[in-house]
Each structure stands twice: as C-alpha cells, then as structure tokens.
Amino acid sequence: MDPLARLFVKGRWQDWPAAQRDAAREFLAAWWQHTLVDPGASVPAHEALAFVAEVSGQLAPWLDTWARLLADPTARRRLVAAADEWSYDLVVDRLPWSSWRDEEDTACLALSMWVLRHAPAALREHDASAELRDLVQLLALPDADRWDRRG
View 1 (cartoon, one colour):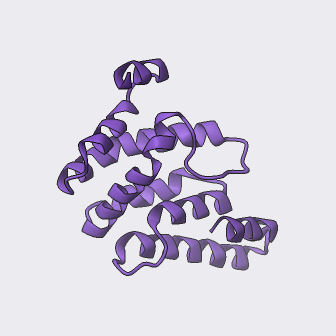
View 2 (cartoon, rainbow, N blue to C red):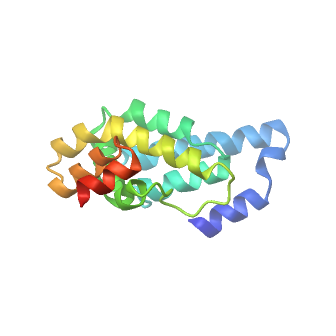
C-alpha cells in the first residue's frame, strides 16, 4: 500500500477542484469503513490506516471512525490484529509504518494512546495472548519504565 499512497499524494489530490477532492475524500472514507466492518475486506486494517493517514495527512479522523465502529465485531477483530502488528513498534515509540510526514512523533503518540484506550477490551474479548495484552498496557508507562518492567 505504501507505493500506492505515495502516488496518491504525488497526485496532489487535496489541490484538485472541490468536487473532485470531495469525491476522493468520500471514497477514502467509504473504503476505510468497508475495511473495518467487512469480514471479506482484502486489505488489513493496519495497512489501510497507514494508507488513509498518509494520503490525507491526518490520523485522528480515521481513528475516530474506527472508535465509532467498535460496536461491530469485525472492527474489534481488526483492532486485535492491528494491535498485534503495531505493539512492538509502539512500545519503542515508533510509528508502525513508513511515514514521510513531519509529525511522525505526534502521530505515534496519538496512535499509542488510541490503542491503549480502545484495545484492552477487544484483546480480552478475543483471548489475545498475555504478551500482547502486556505490551499494550506498557504504552501507559513512560519509556524508561517500560524497559524496567520488561527487564
């Protein structure tokens, strides 16, 4: 998805005429929602989030959509899978995808806090491993304390 995201951005879609820009934004929103709730979605949510965040230059709106959809069992399963993919990167304060944006540290912190807020219930519900549950809980600690706990 990363090469496609880069091409999308190089196309400068956000500078298109309003009707075309709005259509592209609507497509991204519809595709993102489909990815979260359709059990047959072909792109994993963690890859789709990286795509829409990089293409739009924003993370919060996509996470807000996911949070609203967490009543859906597929969206919760997607969160468990994403937390599993992201946990090792987030615990060392690294954004779990390649980014070319300047706000990488801010995005990493926002994603970590979002995972910490929303993932624990889904992890318990889906019998995630104790290791994954522990990694997510470590996100609540300052970096130095994370390493002391993992010791």
